[in-house]
Image (tube, rainbow, N blue to C red):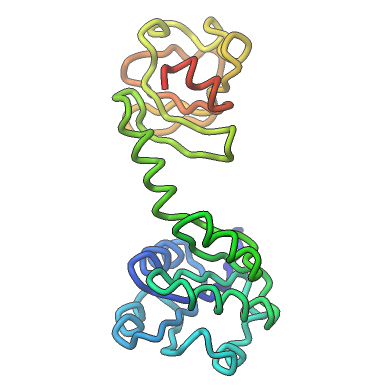
Length: 218
């Protein structure tokens, strides 16, 4: 059974709200904090509890017992100085894990120096996804696992149509792994060598980006 996590979410602007919506959908316990009263009122239906307060105020943060949360997320977008101070205070107060939002590399470095365990770049990551996703009609989805390795969902290359995965011997010939086959909206993650590839199917492929580029003309 999936563990229900306790999450402190600081900053509930657009990105923070989207994060809260997903966390709520996943069934986690969320404490939301923002200094804007209207934002706090708006987020109440999506979270377990919410408070109006200044996260750069150490006295206020102490009252939240930040060390009791599994994860603390700093999703402040419009005020980087507040994000930086909040990240620093969370770690000073014993937060187990702090994830902070950055808009560029310089901000990410400062957040890490202030104690952030992980830094996310929502705008940069989305821009990368859009650029790759819409650069070619045969690319349907894209997930970057690290700077070298990715997962792509692609249409079946014309030269592969009518052939089985065993016949193509993709792993040996192309150094790429087929980890899923989707058809009619349903994903089959139990890929067997006998699956015949047709135009109605799409492939989830895993590998180093340079190998995927060569194999699928990405």
